[in-house]
Structure formats: C-alpha cells, structure tokens
Amino acid sequence: MSRTPTKASRSRAARRRRGKRKITPRSPLSILAQTRKNSVLKKRDRGDVVSSSSSKTKLTERRSEPGRPSRLNLLPLSTEPREKNCFRRDASPANYQFVPKGDIYITRNCRKLTKESGRIVYVVYDDRGKIILGLRVPADIHAAVIRSAAETADSRAQAVQLRDEKDSAQARQLLRSKFPLMPEESLDTILEHAFLKGSGRVGRTSRLSDEDKAKLAVDAHIRHTHTSYEALLKSGKTRCEARQASKEMVHAIRTAWAGGNVQPTDCLTMRDRVIVID
Image (cartoon, rainbow, N blue to C red; front, side, top):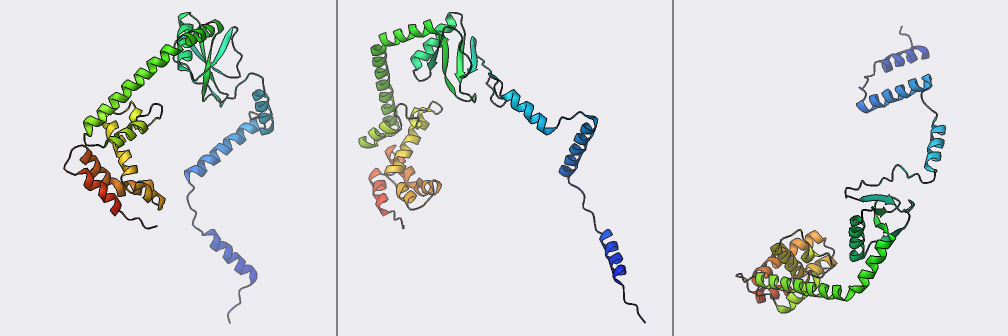
C-alpha cells in the first residue's frame, strides 16, 4: 500500500530541488560594483566618509562664492606671448577697454600695439569658456587704433576692392583654362556662387588645390542646373541617392566642357529624357 506524500514532504522536496539550481558566474562589472560598495562601507565605519547631504551643502557653498568659476567652466591656457585668457565676468584691469571681435583691422592692431608697448592683451571668453567675445586692451591703444581706422578707411576699402577684382580674375582664368568649352553664362554663375567672397564655399577654401576647387565648383553647378538632381530630391530621394543618380551626367558634361570626346549639346539634351515618378 503506497503512501500519499504529505504537504511537508513535498515542500522539503521542492527546497532540495531549488538548492540544486546552477549558479551563474557574476559579471566583472557586478564584482567591481560590490568591491566599491564594500570599500565605501569600510570607510564610513572608520568615520572617513562625510554624509552625502553635508557634501552637497559644502559643494553648493563653494560654488556660490563670488568670483569663483565652476570647475566645469575652465579656460584654455594661452600659448601666445603677452596674452592671458579671462572670463567676461572677471574684473577688467585699470585703464583697459573691451574691444568686441568683428573688425579685424581694429582687433589686429590693438593686439599688435599692446604687445609692442610691453603690456598684456586679455582675450575675453564667455562664461562657459567656449567662445571668444573680444579683447581687453589699454584704453589709449584702443583710442589710437580707432583714429587710425577712420583715417585709413577709404584707402583700405580701395585696396580690398582691387584685391577682390584680382581674385575674381584669377578664378575666371582658372575655370576658363580647365574648361574652355564651358558656356559663358555658366562661368559667370559659378564665379558668383562658388567663388563669392565670404561665402565659405568650395571656391574660397585654402585647403584644396586650384584644380580641385575648379572641378568641385563645376560639378556642383552642373549637378544643380543640368541634371535631375533637384527633381530627385523633391521626389523624396536622399542627397546620396540623388548624387549617385546624376553622377554619370555630371561627369559627361564636365568632360565635354573640358574639351573631351562628349559633345556638350548631346549631354544637355539628355536632361529632358530623365523621368521622375512622384
């Protein structure tokens, strides 16, 4: 006659089964966290650790001290002779004048004359220490530079105009020499766009050779005006997809303008054959 297992015996059997469960090894991160926790507990038992509430109170008090910058707002060290960096909130030295950045003639000459006089130029940063706002220079230096700027304004403007005309002529000669069959209208458009002073576009960069600047400027003009690039973007294509789709057309027209085997008229008529389905 078999015995029916009691509730107590079933409970003991269940505990024995649970005791045989496989124990997974702890991860290195959990071991490191436990080690740090044990270390903090030991220091607290020895009285070496201050409570978190008092630590926060002291930190707040230190940060609220007048003239004390946050430890997160650190100024970069100046590597220039006779220059020091400072925050905008820092007190200005006596008889010094703040000069905002923007007019390169004024800032350049203020910096130059201050150093020549044996005094310090202070470079002023915003409160985060990230953006340069201007300079602090002796007031007498600043006044002299302002007078000089007014006296030379007309001659400097003429010099700038002559330099701009020279740069434009050189850019035109570069494009014409590389792409002798380029239409005059396209040449003018590229000069007014890619080589425009202050535009920051490819024609004004100093990091590329003249040949690369001319090629990239012509490619951009062809892509936007002689291919379906813009239509592809409007149809939902990404810039990468639109560039890839118009790549062959751009190369063909550029080759034609450079005097290659492809005729420019054949390339331009191909544009009308590209169909974009919305």
